[in-house]
Length: 155
Image (cartoon, rainbow, N blue to C red; front, side, top):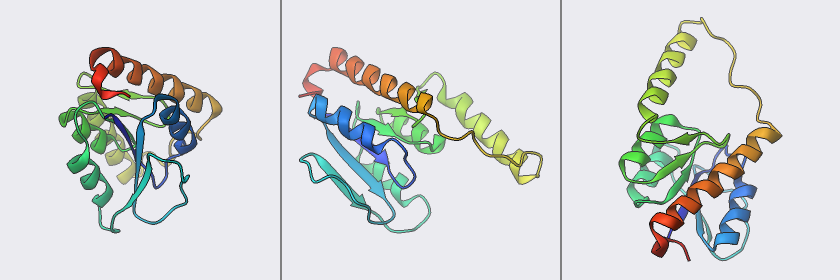
């Protein structure tokens, strides 16, 4: 059965994930470094990992199966999930694929170096309603694609 994994500590689209997962009768696993309130609905699970560096990422990569969906803003986690055969989507609706993940990782590393040198001091733009809308569209598209290509994965 297809599952949606959410890198949950700072994810702004958890409510949207819950709604879409309920519509398609999919499971949701939130992975976080600390406890958080989650709906008590069937199929929604919170998995709390330790506070160590990349513990949530490591748990997701060890648990995700091919065709699962991972919601994360972490490009390196997205890259690892794609290598495991999963789909990765950012909360802003960016669909990470085998074709674009290399460029995304390179851009992330370049920007990190520029920030480290003090050449870039600003962060990403604030999360917007448009980002939320694009995320919902992309999540639905990915689920529909998996449904067409692997009908046994979605209930």
